[in-house]
Image 1 (tube, helix red, strand yellow):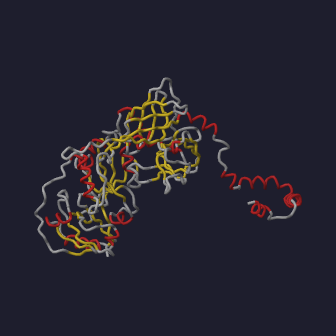
Image 2 (cartoon, rainbow, N blue to C red):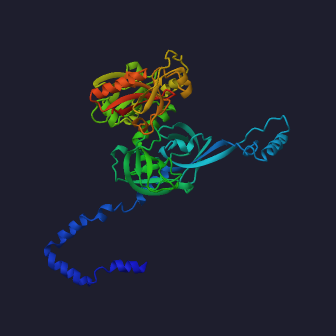
Image 3 (tube, rainbow, N blue to C red):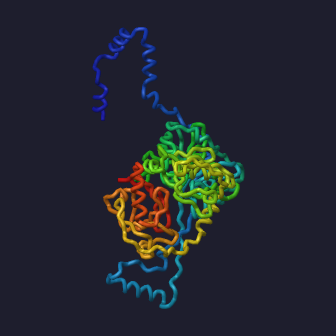
Length: 511
């Protein structure tokens, strides 16, 4: 309001000329230097962004496209009676009505399919007609159309797609070479660098927004290879698959996701770095599929308690919770409880680093893996397999093995707030424990106030090892806890399996 502005502007009522004279008298010949320092130290000077992004926008806009994807969805309503609550006065009436409409014994009409369309963004990377977008933009689509800045519409062929890093490669046939964007060095981007997003928010068409890199290496739990750029450049629904440019007009990321309680931009957007997607794009263009390195291990994070129980010092590396039966790691002799601290010469600072480094390694390469086993450093040489082949092998494994019936029932014991019992047939049936969990001690109850409950240990889980030693009786666990306490350890490391056979390590404090 005018009154507010006026009030803020009237803090010093002395005439401006008088103020200028006073400053000149006091500072004299030092005035230019003082003013220069004041300008250098001004927050406004540092906060000032580019004078204009018009030239940049004009140079890259023609490389950005809109993506229209049409999917077929089964119409569950077709030929089916409406769902009513059982026991209502109308359920019998509706059933009889629809039975007569189907003419007694005639089968219900087949369900029809209805079309659903989605809009996204993309960008040209090769004048011959190669277009990049997100996998989720075109997932399960039967008809994909690429719409260019000049309004031209071309049908697209899906060359290949990858859900793990959410990228897809499309191919269009254009009458003349297309203007293509070029990838830049995403590893050189720093927090605070200016970026520009171009895309198709809410189907509006080519839209330019600007901001900075707010953070690097963000993990948003969307996949195994998360290392997103976070940006405050406005990204909305429909921007997915569009490019994130640096100030040189190079693509340093693909806009993929936003964090928003409203569905619109609140200044927290995420882009997959070019360094992550370019190798995948190359594979998709060459083979039509991905070819990632495969180690064949299940890993988990090394926290402070696990690091202490394994005598690692500071938390580091990736803890091997298990190995795949037909994987390279098992063939090379890796064991549950090993901590991988270096892979092919690259230090593993935290567990989520390992999948990305392994996946980027060539299939068939022999690599050195440095690990710590029971306090000793060991080096293993492992020939990497192909992840996609490994996933097929794991899926094909027979889940039904011979059930171990040799464990007779024994009285239950109580350790660290857990009630324990031997793994009997009755326990297997009660807790639906599969035969792949061959031996161990079953947890029958957990005190809600115990440390075990805080570590999310649940009844029906099975303790396989304590401090990397197998256990088959509750007494074994009690003895090993006492041994850990007598040895001055602050915690004991448990290997725990759920009923499906999935394992993890849990460090419990020794009282």
